[in-house]
Figure 1 (cartoon, one colour):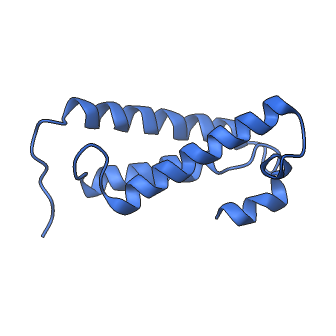
Figure 2: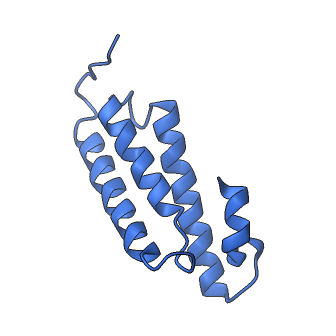
Length: 102
């Protein structure tokens, strides 16, 4: 997904202002990390299928470019909110055993 973003987000190619480049870099790294947590199924401990789906939604929300669609920034904020809430829930439940589907 990231190579396709080079077309619509020139900041990933280090073209633009320093603040814009840093913002897009941090947002992209967070999105990659969230999607990889969902694909691996492990954050602090193994995570449930529901949380994996939430991490995928949050990660893909971080990939939406602001200049490509009008709702890019609000979608990124929603993705960040979902990520923070899901990580906080996982951190709070880190000592409880997880119930994995067979």
